[in-house]
Length: 343
Ligand code: TXA
Ligand code: MG
Image 1 (spheres, rainbow, N blue to C red):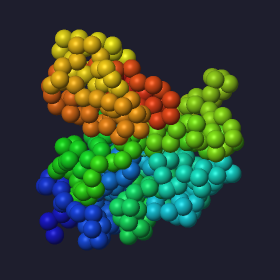
Image 2: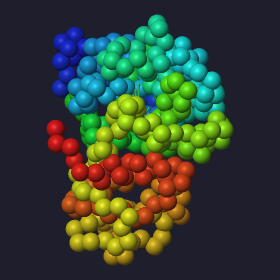
Image 3: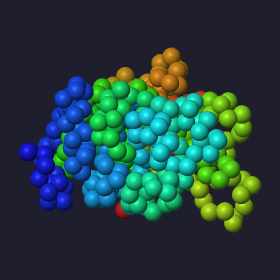
Image 4: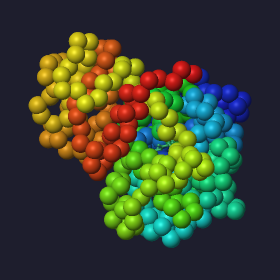
């Protein structure tokens, strides 16, 4: 088989990834490759994921290598339905309520791993907790159902780079080091899932994402804490998602936020109208002409990649409201604009 030698050799694939369609045949092939320890890019409603068998530490080691991701950054286990999710972890009342309200959907819950949890230590980065998600995407769920085991799926980009919302983005970043990519059109939501930690008696927002803080608070009837509680004091360890590094989601160009005016050497990422003063027709893209945050989230990564490809050394970004999914957009832009961490 053209795509299997790496699985035998343990080395990384140095050949073209198989292009799989979203039909029954493509889904079966994707599931087979996953079950054999291969790496498969596949669509979800948030961003494209890079799947690997979460129970197979060799597959997970290959996944970390393909992404260039540090091993201390744990992965999300994806499963096809709520029942499979509940079997992986210990869900308290809040976690159960959130699961029922938002799964399948763009929500990841961090809960204590079940005693018999099959997700390997490497995928969990040695933590006793586990991040779990049930995606709301027909192709993703079909692959998960056929794979019939938890699938670790980080965003299918090189670590630190912009997350992919099209199969073509996955190819740009990972061609040559993965076995297959399932073509599934554009990701509808366009930013990653919201991550909530439900450990102990608290619910904390570790990463804003596809489901807004307001919606979560409405369902729970409580205020959700942010990454590190103000009341926690210095004694409590930082409870942030380890992957939430200062610099992330980064294009090559440097980003300048809250810009009202375009400076020389900058392309422009607009929101609403008018565009910032001095925006050129050839080097500007608008996240949403109508000023709609949902549309802006769906366009965010795509437009950042496209502006980056235009080659200007800088990108200025118009002011964007922070409500609803705007919190996730702000989070991603802030990290994309942060000084780069040198490897
Ligand atoms: O929308 C998404 O969540 C996408 C799609 C593909 O499902 N996946 C995704 O995975 O964004 P990734 O690996 O790019 O981001 C997962 C985040 C990382 O920041 C990681 O540190 C955090 O989840 N995480 C994983 N397990 C954790 C745990 N046990 N405790 C705290 N954070 C955890
Ligand atoms: Mg990611």
